[in-house]
Image 1 (cartoon, one colour):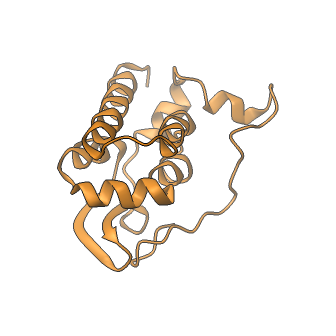
Image 2: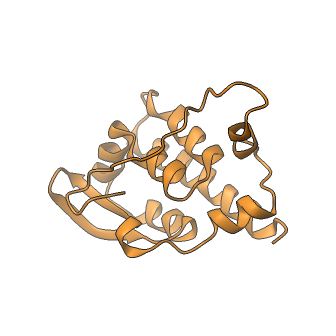
Image 3: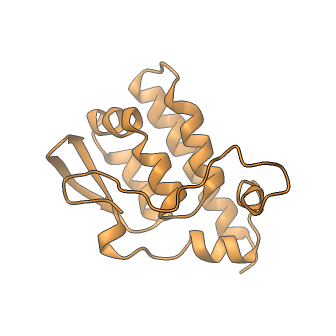
Length: 141
């Protein structure tokens, strides 16, 4: 859950390094199945939207209620917000826990430690998210 102050509180967190054959491995698959597509593309209740901040206590006024909105908002949010949320791991936490797209969360998490200029980071994040949105739009429902 994401609080009004921008903090993310996680419940039932699963490790990305679960043993092979675990049920969690299924959710790391790049090609989503019908059930995964349905869950990931669902509209998210307001209390679980992703709210962008530039720093603690400074909201941008931009939020996302779906993976598709998130993809759009990544293009327009301030650079400082991208750096803030990537540094804290907020994007991958929200994508994994709220959106329930472990594959996309893993892709975002993989970029966390890289020292990329903000514009390059934004481009990578939007490219990954846009590609995922296209895959989900074309997946069986």
